[in-house]
Amino acid sequence: MDVFDDLVGQEQAATVLRRAAAAAAEVLAGGRGAGMTHAWLFTGPPGSGRFDAAKAFAAALLCPDQGCGHCDACHQVMIGSHPDLESVRPQGLSYGVKQTRELILRAAGRSTMGRWRVVLFDDADRATEQAANALLKAIEEPPPRTVWLLCAPAPDDMIITIRSRCRVVTLVTPSSQAVAHALVTRDDVAPGVAESVARAAQGDLARARRLALDESARGRREAVLSIPKSLTNVGECIAAAEKLVKTADEDAAAATAELNESEIAELRAIYGEGSTGKGLNKGLVRGGAGALKELETAQKSRATRIKRESLDTALLDLMAFYRDVLAVQFGAPVELANGDRRAELEAAARASRPEETLKRTAAIMRCRERLAANVNPQIAVEALTLALWKPGN
Image: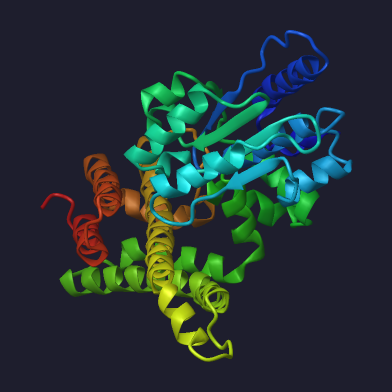
């Protein structure tokens, strides 16, 4: 067992990374280390585990035994406390040039443990154009023994000058069988439940785990899947859209409220709110006004991202539903994400033509694009529900 054994359905990528870890050890021993490079780009669809793969590789680089999974170094990497690991996971919609320059400065230090200095940058595609250019300079001329591990959905999500300097590791969507096995063995989920949520999550292990262990997540999915048959008139379409957007707002509020309060309290404490002494409190709090405004902007960006992700999850569930309808209409011998709703799928298949089903899936993709382009969510989702009701209009 090593750190790569925890990667679900990624045997080919694990083989590549084990060889690279061995090459990295050869470099440390004074050898050539063919196959080891200073910049890596981990790509793969949502749920494929690209961040987990990059973290496992970071552990293999910083572990004396190439990622044994049991030593202090591996444990520190997995919990994010290793002194030679700089880990970044952008919480907002974008990652700015100021943040990137600060990251580059932190990454420039020498290795504490005498092995590598590793920078793990999740969602690197969220870097702004200026941030990407700053990142490019750091990747072109890295300090000795500094390794950049970037994660993005696809190579094309990064500017060509960055991806051309990285070795790309492509992850695949795990099979539902692999996801179900992981849920049974790691989370003690009942086999029947594990198989059902694995199909529903379409290879996304994190989503499957939430569906298996979180009753509210299952409830939200059931509510989304009930939408197609509820769209009988314009009023129902508007109501369904309002419900989807409201649920996304609630998800964002629930995920950020407590964190926002703690961040603001911490910032106010740093700038001296509540301190005693003549003129001390007002001066320091005034000096922190800009920092507080910057924090609030970042918090709004984080809430918007969570809201978009919540809506996108709902849209992907709808897409899976109509994909299943299309499979039933054509009699395709494929695994259905919603096989437990077979009667409902067959009823929807009989009530429409394949051409209409395709128009509905196109409307869902159009809605996702509009939300990504910052169109008002209520307007975008209302247009979608109306198209799902009457795709020919």
